[in-house]
Every structure is written in structure tokens, then in C-alpha cells.
Image (cartoon, rainbow, N blue to C red; front, side, top):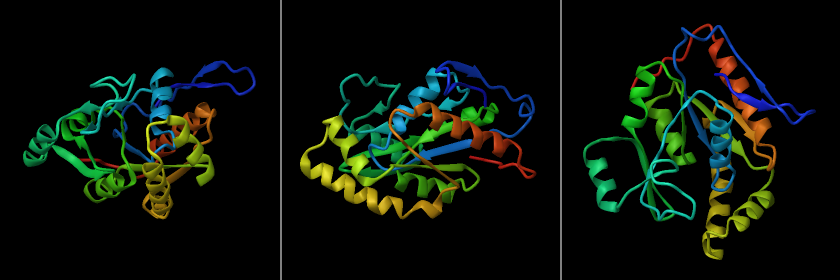
Length: 219
């Protein structure tokens, strides 16, 4: 992996290169964590900094939010379209989350891995647990909120949930944090410190590339 990350003292960007990973096996990185913890923001920063991943676009039946683009943020599908993908076994994992369906299309993952491209996918904790059973050799990273109070502030700032939905998401977050043992790594997601989060993900990938026995992900 090679991407630009902020220099903390100069607030500029550095190019980090690794020359020993050209022939290594491609990684499947699963990024997860509670709703509102900042998964989308982290991925957006990674894209902006040029981190050379294939970024998996998941499918969902939830309504598209303002500024979201179909095919970039999500594949926005009708329930009928989503059900057809389930019936045809075209999803790596899928789940009903807060009344809407989310899933990872297999054709967003398999072709990239076959080409030797490191791949990253964002899923909720339930989805990560499912993928861990199907592809245990993936790298699982949990984004942890600094506190539930900080998570609540983020969710309120989003202004996309009712008070009932907000309470549901916070309660779910408490339960999801208990799933931490399912993951390989945990990163605390401090707001306004996206560069540091990207740097930590970069370090994790660098370490994984140095494994004596590489992870072999076969889908």
C-alpha cells in the first residue's frame, strides 16, 4: 500500500512507498465499527490521498442521502433488486440493518483480488462477523469511537436520524463494541484526525505484508 498522509508538523503530504510488496498476496481489509464512527470519512480520505486499494461499493435498499452518488457511495437498489441478488447468491454477505438491507456484491471483491489488488470493504459489525466465517484470512479493523458521548454528538450532527433511531443506534453501538474480539486491530476514530487513522491503516497493511505466512484470501 502506498498513499499520501499528512505530516503532523507541516500539515503537508508525504508519499510513502514500499518496494517489497509487489509480489505479495493481495489483502482483503474489512473496515467496520458502529454507525456514525466515521467509516465513510476515512475511506473518502484514503481515496483522496491515493491509497491504492480497490474500494468496494456495497449495495443497500436505504434511501440515498443528499450528496450521495449511486455507484460511488453505494449501489442503491430496490428491495426487489436486492432480493434478486440474494436469490442468485451474488452477495458475499448481507443483513437487515435498521430496517434496510445492506450487502457486499461478490463481483466487487473477487475480480480485484484475482488481479492482485488490495481490496477494502466497509461493513457493519454484523457483516464483518459473517465475512469472518466465509473469509477468515481477511484483515479485520474495528473503528472505535472515543466514547459513546462522542458518538452521540456525531450522530446528532448528521441530522439523518430521529430521536428513536438515535437511541437505537447508540444501544446497538454498545453491543457492537463487545464484538471487538472478532477483529485483528482496533483504531480509535478521533474526529478531525483522519490523517492519523489513515496512517494507522497504512501501518497495519505494511505489517501484514511482512508476515512470514501471508494471508491467502480465496473467494
